Image 1 (cartoon, rainbow, N blue to C red):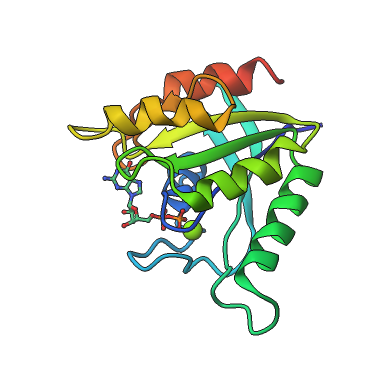
Image 2: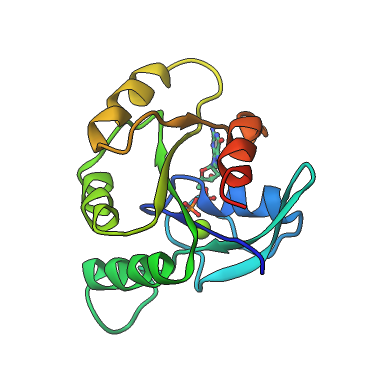
Length: 163
Ligand code: GDP
Ligand code: MG
């Protein structure tokens, strides 16, 4: 049985970018406007010799029923239910926002392994966000750049210890 890894977090942190990088196909829609991914997407993720089932979450703004908050909670709870490992992604350049803290509260209830991922870590300006991420209470964040493929070795270790 394949391990399932879900990428969870507020819109625009880079979830679909990581999904596309690990799945290797443009299955998830990436756009500059937040929340353009319409559905939960699943594909076979690969890092080195590891293969796993990868889930991308989003689609909050497109809902014609229910509040944004309710949609986010629904998707997050579904991801918690089906995934073995949850990658809780924040934007290291933006730091920890109130919406990140909201996701943190939802994920804290999960009886699943949650790994904090601080994305957009390349270049300057991201160190402060990385240290701030500790306050979410999920331990040491993995520093990542989904766009540039940095930090994948640390991600490998997280998935490898679960398989
Ligand atoms: P999602 O809403 O969480 O799925 O975020 P997307 O994957 O759609 O990305 C939102 C925006 O962030 C896009 O403009 C991406 O190009 C950009 N982005 C994603 N990953 C990185 C990264 O590692 N570094 C930087 N600088 N930008 C990124
Ligand atoms: Mg997306």
